[in-house]
Image (cartoon, rainbow over all chains, first blue to last red; front, side, top):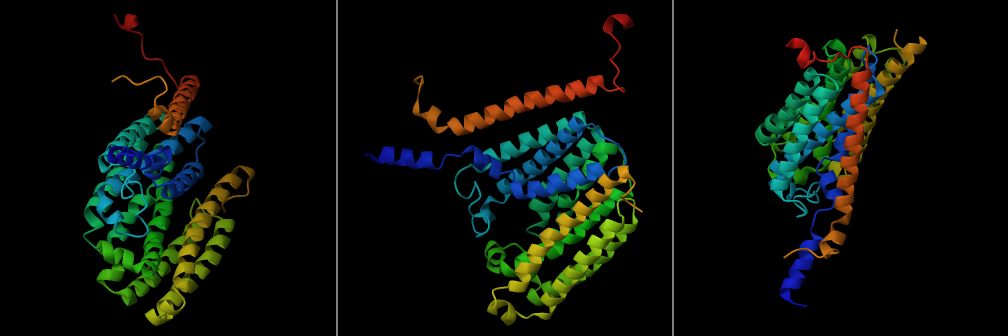
Length: 313
Length: 54
């Protein structure tokens, strides 16, 4: 076999598949976007035609995926350093950075225009702002500049329920912002718990996570502080237009568990964590996933029960 | 050089091409369904005909 044919067969092995392009959209993040946007759309006090609603959620999801592709384009250099991200399509050599840029820009344009046509211009404009916020404000600016990167940047991940609400109503009100705040306040403890047990990743990549810039003790205290604020907000939301008795019950149980987890994290030192391979931090991180899913699930349940006279107060 | 009818590249990229084809077909169906919903909704109004203005 000649050198040329060996090189060619290697190049073919590295060729991008359909799945590689799909992976550029960050499917896991997209599933969160789909779910929270759907809750925002269904919790709105208006009925939406199922086809219009489906299109709205689809294009919000594509917009979220597009911003993921643009994030991977910009962060290709640090993705190849971090264990968690080095198998992504660009660092793995499956997709060229330029291709990811073109893919992300094309899908951004498509999603914004289609959402504006399917739902309303306000929703399309808000999706465009969200993509801008995630790509420019978070990825290009804050992520490598400040340990508060995920606090402010977390707003981008919190916008989908607001977009879903606007897609349904064409207007803004307090309720979608409560859903925004729920995700916004949840993001820091969720990511800082991850940063505690993925320590070397962020160190190696030079990303100024709180664990790197302010130390791990300070990060643990920050987790508790944000969890307390989150708990107050999450329970208060029960008494708003999107809350109700079911949501209140869910919020009380989950916030008690979350506060307990944050308290345990604060009380631990590094030796304890190293000894059990960050068991408490890992379980807090897993709980955080369930926490957000069940809060939004409860908001959805309240909205779906309302036509039967059961949801809300 | 022109590609043979069954070039190796066709097999290699078959998955990607089929995926893109299915997505494009789904997009066409979706746009059609959305158009039907929009034009049959109560709030839909046809724009004034060109001839009517003249």
